[in-house]
Length: 197
Length: 197
Image 1 (spheres, one colour):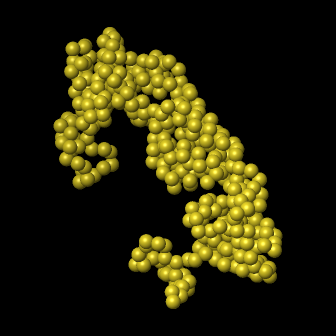
Image 2: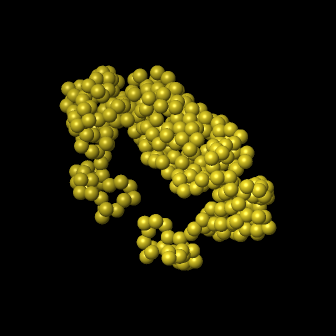
Image 3: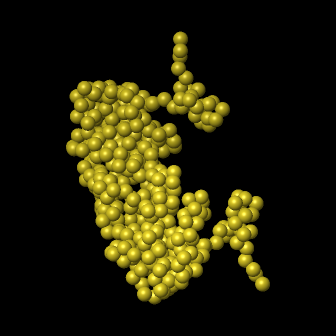
């Protein structure tokens, strides 16, 4: 195979979920497209890594020192929602149910993969939580072992501070049938039952 | 979502088989990679469309006017294998069972999609087949309706010339069980049976 084809396939195969077949299919597709389209894709990827930075305050994706959420004074400054990764912010924002701020930890405590509390933006969170205006820290970490233990660690650290600590609800996803839910989720759904009176 | 993220997702979604979810996953992966890696991918895509051309003789992928196969005088100049698309050449070359030349038609005759013989490199093929050194034209078009009718059309055009016309074998793929083969393939396998004496 000629060099430019081979190199494009090699580079595409480094992406997650893209094997030889998919890379070939993509390449052959690109070769039938207008070169301008391919240039737009290529530029978008370069701009992505050159322009997308992390917010110095919360760790969210940002094009400057401060992300759009931290820079928006209309956001409720009393609440900080703690997430693991920046894309969790994107996901939670899509609900349009939350008007507060965020804090991205950058991962979860995981002794097996050698991620300790010092590797995460936990000290920054505690500093932010100490501020007078902050009243509630909402934990929105993934409901799996590492998320639970990171949440527990954060609760221990946050408890001495004068803030309310809450966690987003775990339970039955909307539209799912009880029959197909796992026991752990059903247990959480029971524990988190709401009073409807 | 911030502009560079949004734009990268929009561009990735134009690729076949990549939807919103996959595009997001790729983007988030790229953002955790070394920017140099992303630049290499971006450069490879640009080089792909800028450097990969079509061979002026056979229509195969090429980095100059002549592809590696047409430029190689050790290839058997007596045989021309006719394929639909340039990547069929790559595929057939991978077998290492063929030492002749190729001819890429650029598609198949398809009245429904308005592809007529004039849209394909058929006249070029006939010109090449007329050359004294050419003794065999091997048809290797996809064994589906359009492939079959294009092959039939080519046979009609090639018959007056002094060349042998052959077609690659259709039959049971290696390693497949008879039980799961379709009737058409089994029929072709019978028709194409070989004498083992």
